Length: 285
Image 1 (cartoon, rainbow, N blue to C red):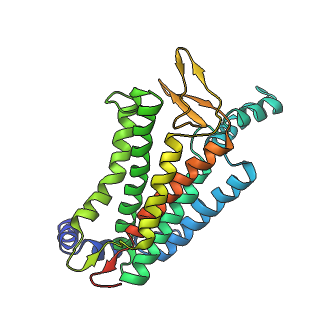
Image 2: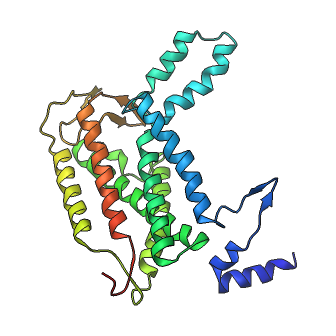
């Protein structure tokens, strides 16, 4: 207890240096993941990029994490004879296209690694400082795509509950808003006398490409399969492969073109923010 005041005083004076010195080395592992940004990038690459990429390739373009989770959860039922092997496979197949896609982990992990490596190598921001800034920018990027998707789904698919202050959507909105908060703090708190955002030709190209792909998605010109749930019929504008219908009932409509466009919008929006947030020293070309 006697060390607590001195720790907080050091933290208020030099927060990142203080965090970097915290040693949580137990059983051969360093549990202070903020202590070494290089090791964390390697771990993220192996666990959250490489493994999901392999799953994405092996299980199909619209495959999801939920398929594997529900498969694993039902293995005990299979082992104890409550369901057959075919029923176990049916459970796995029933979640194809529904839930969290492997592509999200692949895209945003690469974004994290790219930001972190740039800050380390170009600006000398390391360890906890590096990871705090990186987390802020990645969180802001994720929120930006989600906010765009909510608004578009609200307008074109007439699912007005998607932006509401009622549970369960309120929880999701607050959760994603918390993703954006650290990024907003970094953006507003950036020392603009020393650093600047990267407004170069590539940022402009990625931004214009994102806008063009969004317009293509909003006014999708190709054939889609309409989904009917009660009195609601899906719109050909801003079509989906996974529709969330109140109250959070998921429906899958296979369409490789729509799924590809969804990923392209996410990728180019991510590239836009990646290039924009590749901070430079003031005056640096």
